[in-house]
Length: 425
Image (cartoon, rainbow, N blue to C red; front, side, top):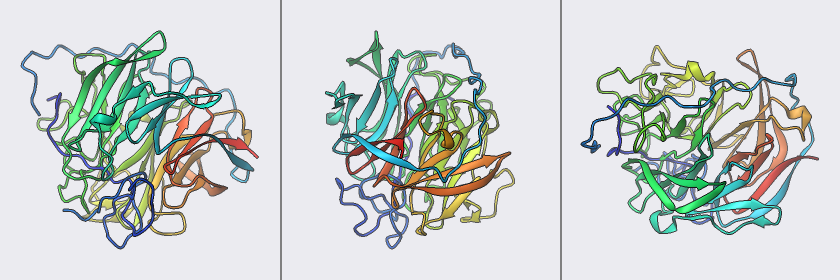
C-alpha cells in the first residue's frame, strides 16, 4: 500500500553528540553514545541516546517514467590515482549550507539549513529563490536537508523537516528554467519520533525516479527496530515517481510492492542514517554512505538494479560487525568501512564518483569525507573490490555534503559556512 501521507517516524543523525565538536548553529550530530564523537554528518545537537491517511480517491495505475534509464557511455578509461595534488577554492560563503543540486540550465542551487535556496553565480551566492524558513526548524538534526531537480527540469524537490520535526518532501514548480516559489505542492510526509537520524537526502536516479534516504528514526541503537522492519519507510531508501500521480506514484517494479504489510516505496533497507547517497553518472551504480553507531562508518556500493530489495544490515549489523543480532542471510556488506572515532573520523559524509575533466588523475575515484575529520578522501574500486583508499590532503571543514555540477566537477559544503570547489593544485 502506497504511503501517500505517511504517519510514521523517521529520525536522522548527522553526527554523534560530542562535547564541543561543533559550535555551528547548534549543529552537533546526535550520537548514540554520549561519550562517542559526533556521529552522523551535518546535524544539530541532539543526543543519540533518547530514547498514514490514504486519500479516499482510487489510485490510478502508476505511470512509467518518460526517462531513458541507460546511463551514458564512458568516453575515458578509468585508472584513478589518489596521489594527485588537489586544492579547495572557496567560491561562496553561507550561514550553514546543507545541500545542492544542478538546475535545468546548469546553475548550481544551494540550500541553507535554515530554509532558503540560492543560486550560485559567478559573483557568489545569489538572492534566495525559495524561502521555507517559516516552515522548518533547526533544532536537533533538522532543517532543509536535501535538494533535487526533476529529470525533465519541471520541478525542484525540497526535503526538509517541518516545525514539528517531521519529514516533508515538497515540489516547487520550475517554468522556463525559473523556480516559481509560490507554486509548491506536498509530495510526501513522514512523522519523526526523534530529532536525529532523519536522513533527508534526495536525488533523481538514472531511471528518472526520485530517491529519498531516511534514517532509522533516531535514538541510540535503533530502539524502534526500524532498520529491519519493511512495514515502515524508516531506515530505508525510498523510490517514487512524483509526476506519475498526485501526490506521487509508486513504481510498479519496486521490490516490495507485492509484499503485504511492506511499505511499497522501499527500494532498499537496513540503513541507520544514510548521510548522502549518489549515482555514478556514467555507470548508474548506487553509492550510499551510512553513518555508524559507535563502531563502523560504511560505504555501500551496488549496481542500481542489484540494489532493488537489498538489505544493508542495520540494526543487526553495523558494517561487518554484528550489532543487535546475528547477520541476516541476505545482508549486503559494505564495500568499505572504517572505525568510528578513529583517525578517519566519526560521521561519514558521502560524495560522488569524480567524472569531471579538471583533475584527470582523479577520474573514476569515489570522493567522500567525514564530518568530524574534514579531510577529503578517495576510494578506487576495481571489479567490486577497493584497491586503493587515501586522503587527498585537503580539509573541507565540517563537510556536510558534496555537489556535482553539470560537468562532473565537485563542490564541497562546509556546515560552518564555506562552499568550495575541488580544483587541481
